[in-house]
Amino acid sequence: MDFTDRPRRLRTDGVRPLVSETELQASDLIAPVFVDATTDERVEIESMPGHERVPVDESVDRVREVMETGVEAVMVFGIPESKDETGSRAWADDGVVQRAVRRIVDATNAYVITDVCLCEYTDHGHCGVLEESAEEDPRLTVKNDETLELLSKTAVSHAEAGADMVAPSSMTDGMVGAIREGLDEAGYENLPVMSYAAKYESAFYGPFRDAADGAPAFGDRRHYQMDPANAREAMREVQLDVEQGADVLMVKPALPYLDIVAEIRREFDHPVAAYNVSGEYAMLHAAAEKGWLSLDEVAHESLLSIKRAGADLILTYFAEDIAAQL
Ligand code: PBG
Image (tube, rainbow, N blue to C red; front, side, top):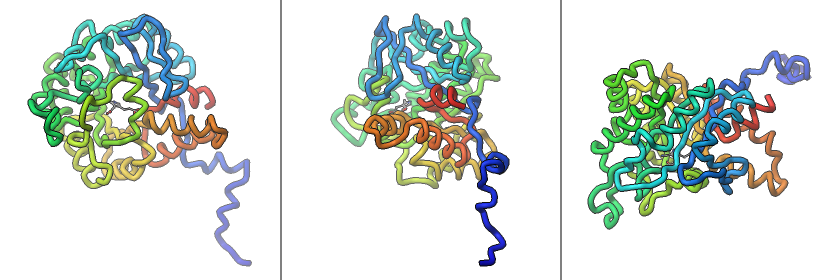
């Protein structure tokens, strides 16, 4: 036997950490937090073990729990007290996210990011203003340009409440530009936008739609979210968001789309975020409950893989558990 290269030489315990290429840190992680205006008690989210919707009154406690694990950034999602056709509670000054964010920034040093979308706020559950005959005609769903102003107003109201960053997730064409313009006009030139730039029409969002009560009442989101078959199109989506002023580029979901994460990492200089979504979380929990997988190990390996693929930031329901272990 005459091998010159034997990779196993660098796999002994002493040298492994020295040659490790990727390291997961608590400072890479963002924890999603659900604030619910319809309850005054915490409500467990059945399909996402360990996660709860908390009332506005407990939003500060919830964020403190996150921070105790070493995670310093949160993404706030809101469940409003009422829904209507346009989703007007999304930009209300006394809306659920606005009230929660005011308290959180007052009481903690957390870095507060808000999800900017309308699907939790519209009675039809779509991410924008509906076409007149959308309910009858499955080829129609959301009016693009009419939705932009509402997203912009929502982002500005989050900024006014004290959000540190806004994250539009509606996949409306032009959303980043409209939000950037709205923020700049309102004096928030320094507030960054993290765009859900390549967000796929994915079946992995199922548990989230229960958690945030945002499932569409009819139809689906395939007219605005991306086709899972497409990779080159993701580069166009990202390019458009970069031109419109996106500061951070997100891919969602994460694990089934690591090729997209890697490609964006290669092609763009911006920080890349990946959203390890509700279904990715729920399936590991379900398998672990059956004793088929070791939860901590697969969770860690998942996040490490997302980072190795090129993500700088990871939005994940595992944030607290993993950070506590690191
Ligand atoms: C809102 C939004 C969704 C998620 C984040 N923001 C749902 C959707 O698009 O249906 C999903 C997150 C997850 O599954 O963890 N547009």
